[in-house]
Image (cartoon, rainbow, N blue to C red; front, side, top):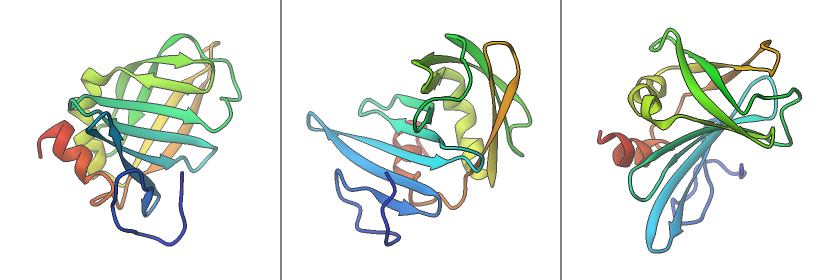
Length: 154
């Protein structure tokens, strides 16, 4: 998903880069969806943000292959940043490679997280042991601008 060459022209279906963020606007049946992803410092885990054409926010954590531990079908993922000291959010896993976070709470706290330098996410194993992943959130003024505008109205 990452391209070389830094910032490029922002066209539909073209991957662009700002700092650690790769972002794209995709045409979905005449409507535009915006997506952005950044990789964790510790492993091949990506934080993926998507703003659907209807303004719904989707937040997920995706391992490039699969998480190296067993996930529960539904669990509580812990988020921590300077602006959001601790938040537990419900998450559902898909085939041990992707975790979808409940969008209702994320819609309220993601604008605060986007302002922070980093986000630490703790993902629980099936047996309860936690695995931490650190995501650099900055710079994101260009990469996340369309997501902020469409999904958060600012």
